[in-house]
Length: 384
Image 1 (tube, helix red, strand yellow):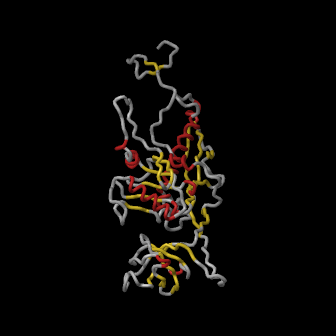
Image 2 (tube, one colour):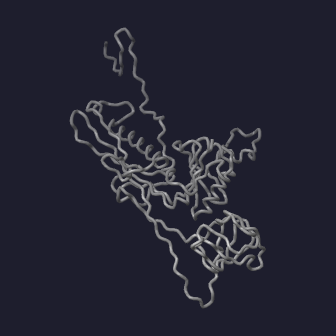
Image 3 (spheres, one colour):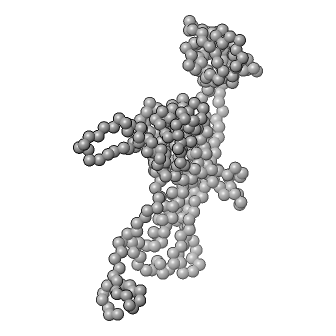
């Protein structure tokens, strides 16, 4: 074949000459975005140990529940049992959930968890007591000149998570490094970038769905060390569609979302500012205001999108993540979550010794998640 000056290839002498026409780029369609990590942004510090710990504290509780179903007369009885009598002091004004009556605590028996009260205090009207009602402490009134009461305090608690090592091996032959690649300037750099994308994808998935080992979670020669993810960390504000007094709709409604946000607000001082959801529930949120949207014949486009949801309990950015389990929504206070690397172990490339005509190494990162005050977050499960 005579020289033509064109880059050609042949598949046999009987086929005509064909010139290569390949765009100088590589198209990537595989999912690799990390919207939750992007929303949380980089942490202000790193972990200093493979067992990562932090401290949490709480104020003395000012609510309890009635634990008494044996009232003689629910309107006139002056003593009833609660779950935790040690939360109360003599002189507390209290009120039961949904009742207008105010009562004054006059005696406390911590052995039987019994409160003795003055009914209809301050001219309020006595109303029926009932089992399982929430008891709210309005405030305590001390006697003038009285001795100091016994000190009460809370103990700080230590919370723990574990670092997880993410690795991927890169290896490129000497020939692949030497030849000119289509769409790629350096094959080794390209493989590093691809493997890093994969590891970032896996990190986000682990932050949402990961579980720590039940035995030897700190890791050993036979136990891999894994981080505990957000879903595995939430227990206080875990709502299931149709469970207890949570609405029974399996398709997410605004009523369900607001109820969950209100429960988180009641349980903590958390400020939910992230709603993390999968595709189907994102469509449900987009449809909250669909019936009130107006379009006329002159509109050339139809918009049905909610990226920010503003309620009485906070302004929430709606984050669409393909790594969320179906039928599940996370309600997060982003100021209380950090995804932190072990010091000096954020994603990096480590060359390995060459044992032949090739170059290789590992992309390595070691991370954990710090989720503070789990009752400041929430999760809704059981949706369609």
